[in-house]
Image 1 (spheres, one colour):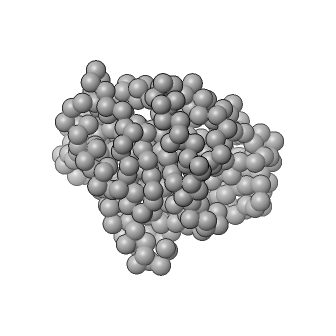
Image 2 (cartoon, rainbow, N blue to C red):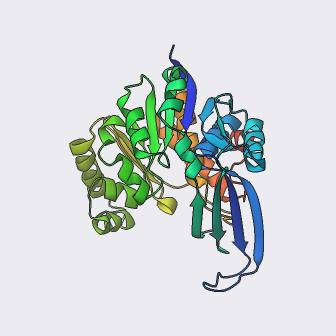
Length: 319
């Protein structure tokens, strides 16, 4: 039976190793700084953020039978995520994500080793079909195999499907499946790639804050390719543009008075906030605002997932 408040996340779980440069990053040279290790992965981060917000969330993912897998399960379980259906694989190491962050909190570069995600295969998903069938919302991580994403989108679940393209390379996996998605949360470059739009034209309209022309360009392309899809385009400091069958709006970014620590993980927090809002029957505008507040919390700390997000949003009057 469908549970409109239950959320299922299908995606990657890995250990993040992050190096933070103490000064201006020097390419091709050794840089002073600090190195931290934490639990991560797009799917896992979204699930953990939702768990910290008090949501009923199940994570479908894979970990190795090693100390990294044990850490992931322990950390994610502390967020209240249901881990009953996690696939533990003895013949693979838990995924690892290695990132370098500059002194301004921006990502310099990263390498991921996530072969284990191929363990999220058809047999595994069929074993957990009842879990997927019972969800009100399903978040899909585009690190998954393209055929697996297509299978999930072709199943016609009664739940709503939300996807973050993650990157232009990974966005290719859903380029011909946009009409099967309910909510899509690309950044500007990913949106332009998916809808074959000249990014320079749209970027100019946004920088000039020409709302009417920007909406016209976005809406016309969305309606032509995916008329029923709700499109949430993230613009960083410029805020968020929403284009959907019922309305469009430009939500400004949350004001920041504090120093940005790092931006990695902000997109996962944003997605979790949006899903939280929609699963609680908030309007799309309210859900986007919650998502932006979650992203704000994320970039003001070096934690990939903020365990205090619910209380912080309560303090700010968002929830």
